[in-house]
Length: 215
Image (cartoon, rainbow, N blue to C red; front, side, top):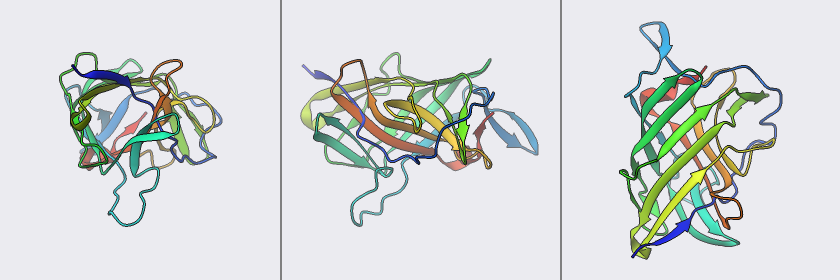
């Protein structure tokens, strides 16, 4: 029988000048096609990938995601990616479900469970911005996967980060001026109140989605 554990996020370096004044931006994912700005339609798939690590030296906090129990690091992965399918993109709410994931370089091999009911990325509400970055703290992320080598079914239900810079949760961010690329960030994110497991990660939208932005 698989042992259930809750994941949590090891600290991720985020610019200290990240958050501040609020803005009225709604959570709707946009893109330009043939010179026309429009919303990304439901059913569209996109991939978010960790900043690349070439295997030389130690990866930066942004290039490696890992979870910890207290002070002990249980697993670290590099060059990982997550693929999602858009299920809602209107009314100030963006939702997508994970369809695939790749963890090519991990200290413990992992296999993604893409059929677990209830997995979802959602972004709602207005943005908060300061300096060169904009963040949506109304972000939630649920997921489930199996660590095959340890026979552990690991899962997480991450809620929005808080503070400035944001921490203890998940958020999406984008450059304020350029608007893209969007990144999905987890910073020392606990999966439940009182959990000792914390997860840190950063995934940047790639390919065609690298030019998308939240409006």
